[in-house]
Amino acid sequence: MNDYPIEQILPHAHPMILVDKLVNYTDMSSACSVTITEQSNFYNPERKSVPSYVGIEYMAQTIAAYANVLKLDNGGKVSLGFLVSARNYMTQVREFTLGTELLIQVELLFKEANGLSVFDCRIKQGEQLVVEAKINVFEPEEPELYLQEQAQK
Image 1 (spheres, rainbow, N blue to C red):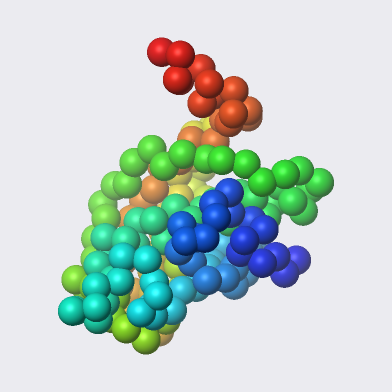
Image 2 (cartoon, rainbow, N blue to C red):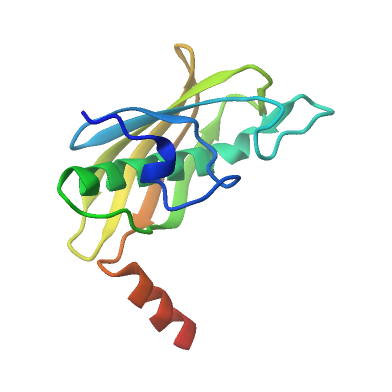
């Protein structure tokens, strides 16, 4: 496993990078972590927390980290993917509180030749499972061309 800084593997720039670091990855999965601070995007200072629905973006960015580290490991480059849908987004908490460290885990369930993939996703706080979902993503072979085609429609 290579040790990539999160900025190198996500096709985002700060402040839209929401996860802190890539913890590990394999050919079929990856994990990222984030600690909730007062500087976290979507932080609510009155509640001292981030709403748990932001977890969907933590999951999406962990999926992007997975896809892009495998590309970099094989001599490719970082590219865009698209969140298509989330199914069965179930949360055990209303919010992620200040100081909480979250571990976001994603596992590839299947990938179609056309670029559609499904991931089983979990967010843990310590050993406690706090969020889970199935995330569908689309990763076109040429994302920039795909975006141009969509803009012309």
